[in-house]
Length: 238
Length: 106
Image (cartoon, rainbow over all chains, first blue to last red; front, side, top):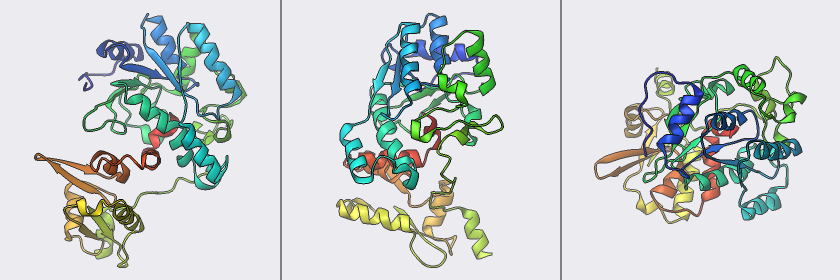
């Protein structure tokens, strides 16, 4: 099912409502990371919308995050489907490279096993998913649309739509909503954590730092692709 | 498949790795053509294809199916979807996250 064409910016609540009404029950779900994107669950609850919720349990989350997942489950009286990585793939990774290989080799290999694998499997059963992604989380998200065809997980015969109701919101707006509506939140936020992922790969930051600084801080942002830019040629030839 | 020759005349390492993997998996013969993008020659067929499809990475794959052209810049996605080889699923997932930093925050 292709994303419905819309014009103009809509409120997060409107995006959420449209998304849930556009897809059959069971074919769309909120991806809940255990951090501030709990706002999506609250917005759905406040509008009386019923929607599936899933989360990725990588096996390396903070205790506070597990407690928070449980708090959200009880607070909203909802089921949260907890997705876990393929044990065979985890076993192969840690047997071969140990439990902290990401500090040497980068986080992508571990994330591929613990996050992308289970996420991809889940998305095969869905037509759409709803995320808490925002433009201000990263420079790579400045063009993040409220509704988009998911180029990463769609295949030739299965289009997946991704809804990002909070795309236009700032972190400040998210927290304004959480405070104003008494939304439960991960207690790690009280300890200076902003972007929360796995325990070994997340740290608290200072107020002047971008939230990205709290994740994979040991890695340099380097160009990993094998570039083929025309300007390279022009420079060489010229 | 469009593969790159660097300005110093060496083949790009990623292209070499992809070529090796295709040969080891007996997929190499399934490619209709291997085209060179020579960094020293903007008129080389591969460079012109890269420019015409606005592709900035190598190698990449051009797949034509019933008149519809699709470009694959992710090798393992190409292997999975076009060659129908799912044996490298974990590597496909790694490639996906390495080429899509948006997935970092999932």
